[in-house]
Amino acid sequence: MNKGQERQWRFQLARLLVWLSLLTSSATLFAFAARWWWPFELLSHFRLHYLLMLAPLTVGLLIAKRYTVAFLTVCCLVWNLTLVVPDFVGPPDHVGRSFPLRLMSSNVLTRNRNYEQFLQTVRAENPDVLLVMEIDDSWVRALEKLRGEYPYGESAPRADNFGIGLFSKVPVEEIKLIYIGSAGAPSIQVVLTVGDAKVNVLGTHPMPPIARRSALRNEQLVAVADLVAAMKGPTILAGDLNTTPWSPFFGDLLDRTGLRDSRCGFGNQATWPSRFGAAGIPIDHVLVSDDISVRNRHVGSILGSDHRSVITDLLIHCD
Image (tube, rainbow, N blue to C red):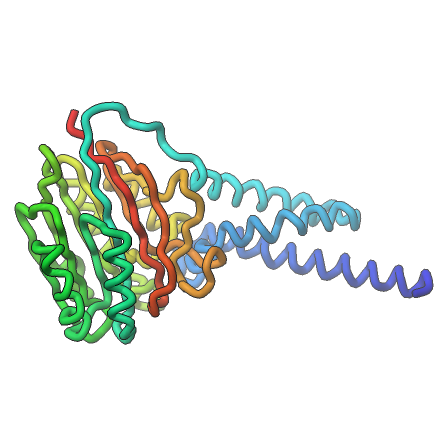
């Protein structure tokens, strides 16, 4: 390669770096308009991806002496960094009398027929409470095999990907199916007896935030927040919420309820699409009140669904 060809190659590479940086930075900035239009909100779900792209792009731009674009890239890099860092920083441990509770939240995918594999995984994970979403009549029949181990619970099967069920080893003081918002999809509200504590658990599955369904999801999240905010004592909100922690609507949910994201301190913990692994996004959540500590949290393996399960080890405090 002669010097002329080398200069041309470097110019083309620098131009590619500039375009990639402008595209990624634009996505970062357009995500600020997430409240205005649902496609902009979709851009807010990839903060970790932007961070991992912008870091090497910044280095390349500085080497290529494209300082103006590098400055924009650094600003967007820092902003994404501030949003992602809390995922790796957990709250302080609570000291006091407490009782353990393991919760497993799984979107099993209605058309998925890997029943036995799922049941084996449930028995291996051994949760005290199992929340399942997207269950139909076939799934309910399969899950009946767990009744000996999980005698408490309720289910609402549906064929439209919004069936839901909850199964518990620990005693249930109260359980009811409720319909939150105008989407018509069921949620499950439970009061568990865990040690000396009465624990509120709400399992819900809002609509995906696409087109008009976005408004239905937002409506349900607001209604869920109002319901949770009125609960007394230890409270858990779990399910496929169809939003990531970087959406402003998720932030509203935390603000209105006073709950914490159980992911904090455990990293990204992506759950969807399941086959993307760590390259996916976290849309399945377990949120907890301040009188609950998170001892451990992990996501499950691929079990035929497009989601990975979330398994959370909690401590219910009874000070």
